[in-house]
Image 1 (cartoon, each protein chain N blue to C red):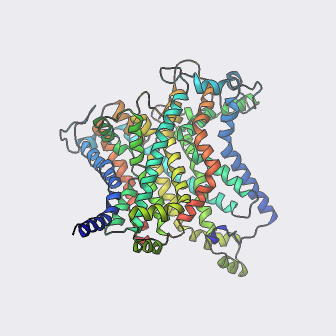
Image 2 (image 1 turned 135 degrees about the vertical axis):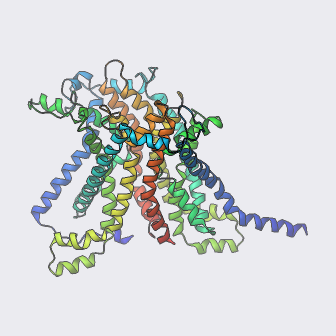
Image 3 (image 1 turned 90 degrees about the vertical axis):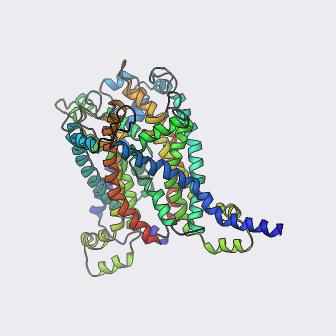
Length: 293
Length: 297
């Protein structure tokens, strides 16, 4: 990927450069604006917001809205705060990410190193599944979850997210393993290594970068999902996004904007942290997988 | 004898193992995706209301659907939203990518700032913009407090303009991602051609117009495919930002389907609308995936 780091050969004058920096700065402000609004308003008392001070820094700094959003705000019928829903999301995301990534790795391995007639069509079928509007599966999925006794449970949501996530994880691992030297696999086969031995000893040790991509992608998508959570979750398995929406849309009582903003940050924090800590590994891993095609 | 039978079994197992490993995923996809699609399409031809029912009604749901003003509004909104969202994201993404490609200081930091909205849930994005655009406490109120008393900005409460606030929030969320796609494309362009053209006296404008932008065709195509499929699937953002309102001013096909199926108990019509959404996405995705997978062989 040496080309990827090349800079352009375009030369620009001083005035043009100043203008470019100005535009870039302006858009940086545009992208930062909602985050700024959320952060400053989550640490000020309500009257500072309603009094026209949304853009101001807090005059009386307080963490009260955060405490309230986390542990005592009214969500639906109970004043539980977002805390239980945060754990619901964790309990759903961790197994769903793990299972879909493992399946994606195995599928990618089979589809590149044990190719058979028609494998590309099967992969195409799996890939198209990533892009369908999920409205088309909502009704039968609700029936199916009821039928197998998983309606309204966290495990039901795990199943849903695994099913509609393996297309992407398979895509990532397939592209990554496609450029992995097949000769190594053949040589190991001649030495008598079996299917799982080859996977375990030869492919898996070098799968780190793409596993990171798959995990980040799945984590972000599943954590941020709203449609499936709103459609299939029961009272005690609702994920964070659904709870946040209930908090914000609640029509009873005074609208506590500062609590809403604190709640929004709480819902955004896990994926934001993943992006800041591991974002560059995501891009790097994607690059490694897309060298060819 | 026993020994050979044993190895025989082993080799046969080995040759079946790859397909065996693939089969659970494949079975899941066949049942949960393609089986379910067939089931939903079938429901769109039945008299299902609160629950699935199997009385065949032919195309009745479709003809009902196309007579509903609610559906017509959803489609018009989708037209406005998709056209603006795709165009603005593409133009903005390409422009920012070109600017960012001029040996900019702190490029990494700027890229991080442009891209982070992509990591957020649409519910979070919707909440932030909902209150920022709210005339009572947000921008309008702030500028009035600062002294510009005649300032008005109440698009989010205005039936004629609310859909543009959905465009604004959606562009905010994804334009950075489109920028990254174009930036990757720009970094892949061979500098030697550019240098040669520069020697011939080509201006920067002409370099971009004649040489660089035409070479970004694949990036344009992927951006279009990704943005159009995101546009058709837009659901959470509308729920969080406007709830489809005011009135029905920001209803989209995805929210239409949800309310007809789950709150109005018109499952047949809901299934018909979902079928139309699927066909629209299939018309874009299938040719694209077909071309992509064929190239890679």
